[in-house]
Amino acid sequence: MIESGTILKGIGGFYYVKTSKGIIECRARGKFRNEAKTPTVGDFVEIEIDNDNLGYVKNIKKRKNFFVRPPISNIDTLIIVAALKNPEPDFVFIDKMLLIAKKNNVDVILCINKTDLDDDNELERIKEIYKNSNIKLIAVSTYENEGIDTLKKCINQKVTAFAGFSGVGKSSILKMLTGLDLETGDISKKLSRGKHTTRHVELLEYEEGSYLADTPGFSMLDIPDIPSNELYLHYDEFLPFADDCKFSDCSHINENKCAVKDAVENNEISKSRYESYKLFYKMLKEKENTY
Image 1 (cartoon, rainbow, N blue to C red):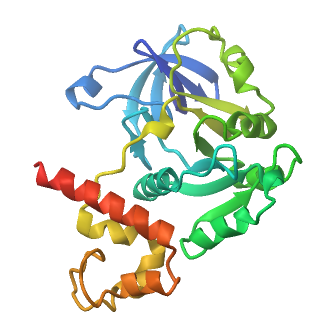
Image 2 (image 1 turned 135 degrees about the horizontal axis):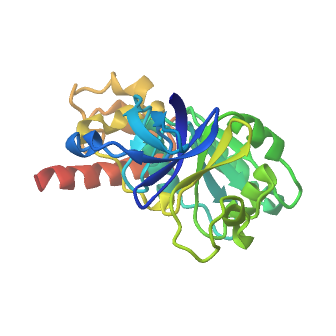
């Protein structure tokens, strides 16, 4: 019997695939070793089920995206969680994750938590930084239960991953969205794994058709391999100005008569975004020069 489904978990060569027949334990066919392709959590697959209700992964359908570390595919939405205060927002980290999302065809939401601490208009400053970036920003206070319903509507019927540093309130947001408490091991219990076992990448279906990607280490991803001369294309606020630069191959770093740099000076592009651009450009150039 042939069924289609989604890989929720993979451990020790076994894959647990959600199908219309329930979750089926599967092995992968040997052909994947020959093709140097490994079934991955998030993959849409075709499986063959035998009479003992055990399955074999026969085919991996085309992926929307794929991450090597942590290994997961077909993420729909990435939510970058930052706190307004305690700790202060790390804009280089935020911009790096925005790059990763854009490069991998992932919708992205910048979630600013702890807005109940905003006694100096910091939220408006952050909004100003990203106002021309085509980034969806949602302000949240788990303390006052604000913004959670808006956030939940954005991830309904999607596969969602979260990225953010310790202390920004990621676990509290996840608990309010899903009803599960990561800090006390509710996900471990739901997925029948011991709280102290090694964590693997898994998809948790917390509502029908809505999945949370439990991805340890997702915040540690490196900037993607983008040609340095194409980096500016991933900064939407640069695009209205880039064609007006004097040089067609302008890097927007050192050249004279650079319309992007002029836009930064005129506050049409935020200085914070431009500083991250320069940092990433330097990193990409250094990587290119080592090849």
